[in-house]
Image 1 (tube, rainbow, N blue to C red):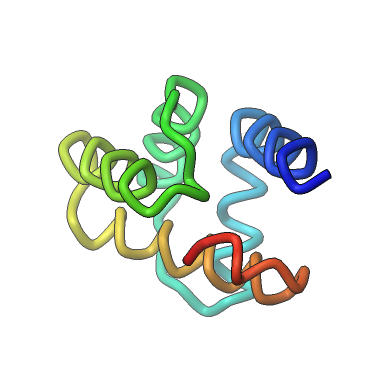
Image 2 (cartoon, rainbow, N blue to C red; image 1 turned 90 degrees about the vertical axis):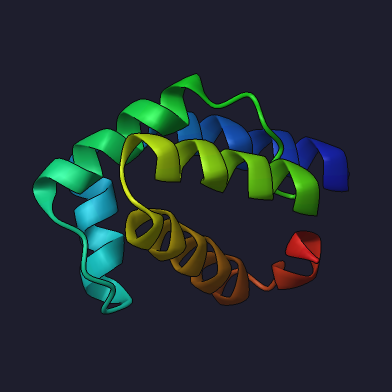
Length: 94
C-alpha cells in the first residue's frame, strides 16, 4: 500500500502548477518567487528521482539547485517536509 501511495504522490508532484507552488510557499511561509515556481514546476515534471528515498531526494534537490538556486532547492525540501508532516507521512522521507 505504501508503494502505491508514494506513486500517487510522485504523480501529483509532476502535475503541480506554478499557482500550486506559490500557494504552498505562502501557506508554509517559504519565500518563492513566481519565476522560481515556474522553474520548480519544470524540474518536477522532468524528475525521475524518488523523493521518498533519501539519496533520490538529494539528487532531485541537487538537480533543482543546478537549474534554480540552492535556496530554491532548500525551499522545495522544506515544502515537501511540511506537506509530509501535514499528511502524517513524514516517516516516508526518512
